Structure formats: C-alpha cells, structure tokens
Length: 367
Image (cartoon, rainbow, N blue to C red; front, side, top):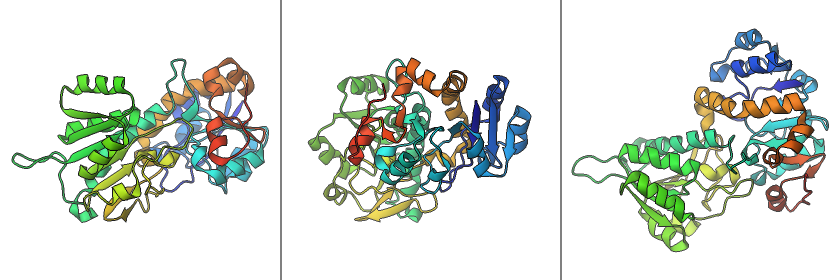
C-alpha cells in the first residue's frame, strides 16, 4: 500500500502523522511512504531522517495525495484541503466531525473513507488512539490555566499551590476520564485545592482512594456544578461523549457568577465544548474574555508540544496502520469491530451515528 504523510495546515500545528522510525517499520513491511517536505520539522523529524527510513520526500502536497491510498494525518483537514481527497482513498486522523459541519460535508462530497482516531475502540471499549492526546491535553490544561491566572495575562493573580499562610487556588475539573484524570494529577501535584465533578460514582471512588482525601469528589448534577463553578479559580472542561457533541454543563449565567480574572480551559472544545461560552480559538489567538472570565479554547492543544505528542500518537496508531496497510482497509475493518467504529464516512455516507445526529444527516450503518 502507498501511504501519504502531508504537512499539517492547522494554525500552529507542529505534529506529524508518522515518525521516521514508524515510517521505517512500514517500509520494511513492503509499503511505500510519501512524505511532504518539512512535514516533520516541527516535531524534530527532518526530511533526511524520513529518507533514511525509506520514505520518498516530495515538496508537493498534491503529489502526496495523488500517490497515496491511505492518508495519515494528525488533525482533521481544512475545508480547503478536502478537494485533494478521492473516492478510492482512506483518511486516518483525528476528525471530531460532530463539531465540524463544513468539513463533514466537504469530505462527504469526495466519497473518501474517513477513519477517526477518536472513535476507534479497543476490545475493552477504551479509545486507544485518543488516550495519548487526552493525557497530554489534560496535563497541559493545568499548566496553561496556571499561566493565565497570572496577572500579566489578565488573571486574578493566584498561585495555584498557594504558600504557607495563604490558601491555594481552587481547580474544578468537570469529568474524570483520561483528560480529567490527567488534569487532576497535575493540579494535585501543584498543591491546588481540587474538586472533581463526574457522573460515574465508581470512578469517583477510585479517585478518592487514589488521592486519599486530597481532592473533593462530587456526583455530577446541576446543583453540584452550580455550587462549585463560581468558587473556582480554574475550571477545566474534560467531558467526552465519543463521536458526539459535548453536553453543555456550564451556562452563560453561571460563567457570569465566576470571579473576575478566573480561567476556563475547555479541553472539550474539539467536540463543541462543555461550557456555553466556549468557542474554538487558535494558538495564535488563544484566549478571550466573557464577563471578565478568561477562556482558553484551543482545539489542538497538544500541537505545541509536538515532539512528545507525535511520538505518543505514533505509538498508538502504528499497530492499526500496519493492519490497514497489510490487510487492506476493507478487510481490516471487517475483521475488527472496534476499528469499524472508527469509520465515520464512507462512499459519501455518514457511517457514525453521532456525526449524523449532530448534523441532521442520514445514518448508514457500516456493517
């Protein structure tokens, strides 16, 4: 199979779909890899490293798309990239189509098969290709939130860990999945006062045992959210419903009750965000204020730690890539129900119900 690795075009997106080492594994397995020149530079991967691994490096993005049977990316394509796809081609990347009607429609017009990292499931029901970026984004959410709490960035001037004689900052984490758990770990490590709101009581029990009284756990309910959010210095949105839009847990009126200079980091922005006032931002212009509350809602947070992110992502995607390339896409999907759940679009049809429901489009079961 011929695999194409184009350079990412999203604002300040420095990750690349495949490392040189993974490229070498694919080439040694008898596959061809075309890499767009400088695609890996932001992650510290040079064109020469790809050449040494056996890839063909080209300066033409168009050539990558023309040659490849399987396009491997990190983020969803821009609308301007979508016409490069063709009907007999497969796209393998993070898609988050439920929040992207224009990209969904543009890809549907091409008729390509689009497999989403974030909806592909392992045998145990986990999301193996979403997990590494969720871990990174969760850790980053506290780091970034702490920065924007600094006065020079417009924040309240609160140090999350406090000092002797001064109470620490209060972090409220909405959701206790991979993102939320990673955020909790960082916030506790900084010495913050942490409150976690989550639907799954068993997950809260596990966290309570893990942190032995160092966090406060609240069962998710409108009352719990209304009581905790206004007291927070930093709110982290970490809610995920795979392949679907995130539910709006925090209303505009509740945001207005937060303290001036407090911060919201909505990691759920990829799926539309779990805060009513969330709107996607970029690394070039990452924040905005609503009622004096700073919002950080960058949809590709891990893109600014690309070396870590690219290698973590490739660790998760390479086993699937080898199977797709060696068995062929149709056979690989038929033999793996979890991979089949990753197929969001095929032959101009929506094959993932969450995406269809989000945009009012017909749903066509894949299998």
